[in-house]
Image: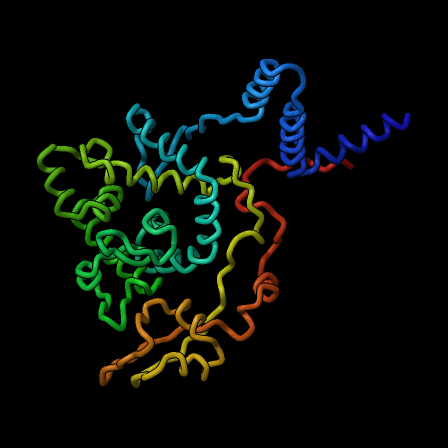
Length: 348
C-alpha cells in the first residue's frame, strides 16, 4: 500500500509542466552512469563501454518545418536544395549549444531596441536575426574590418550616415547602427522589391547581387548560384529565427531569469570637448569600464566636440549595475523562455 501511495504521488508530480523532461534527462544520465560500472574481462569491459556509448550518446536529426517565411516572403521548402541548406544551419546551431545559448541570452537585452527601430523605419522584424548572425550581438571586428553589431565596413557606414573617426565610431553605437542598417535595407529593397534579396545583398553587396541576378536570369535568392558564404547567409538567419521563436522545439530550455535583461539607462548630452573621459565617468558616478561598456562608440579616452555639434552619452540608471535590482524587473523568472509546448492540465 505504501508503494502504491508513493507511485501515485510520483505520477502526479511527473505530470506537472516542465518536470517530465527533467526526469527523463535524469533517468537517461543515471542509465548511462550505471552502464559504466564495467565488470568482467578486458574484452567484456570494452563491449560494455561501447554499448554504454551507443545508449548514452544519442544525437537526433533536427525536424524541419512544413512552412517558413522570411520578412513575409515564403521560403520554397519544396525544393530539396532549400531544405538541405536549412537543415545544415539548423543542425549547426542546434548542436553548437554554448554559442546558441549565448545568442539567446544577448538577444533578450538588445532585441527590444532593435525591434523598435526596425518598426519605426518600416523594415520587417525578421531583420533582427540578420544582426544576430552577423555578430552574435557583440562588438566584434571581422578580418575585413567590418565592425559592430551590424558589421559595417567604414566606407559603407559613412555612406549610410554613421560617423567614423579615430575618436568616434558609430558602427559600435547599437541604435545608430541599427538605423543605418535600416537605411541600407530600404535602399536594397527599393532596388529589388524583395526583402530576401535585400538581406543577401547585406552580405555580398548590392553590386554583386545585381550582377549575378542579371547574369543568371534568376528571379529570387534561392535560385541564385553564389559564393558559399552568401549562399548560407539566408539559411543561417532562418535557423536562428526558428530557434529563437520556439527554442524548446530545438532543445533549449532557458528560464526567463537566465537571459540578459535590458539595462535601464539615461543620457547625458555633451556639447563641449571632454579632455579625460575617465574623470567624466567619475563625475557621473560610474567607473570608466561602465562608461565604455555602454558607449563602445567612444574609441579613445577623449572626446573632441566640434562647434555646433553634440553627443549623447548613455549611462545606466542609478543602481542598475546590481544583479538584484535588474532581476526584480524580470517577469515570471522561472518560466521557460518562449515555451510553446501545450501545457499539461492540472489535476483537480
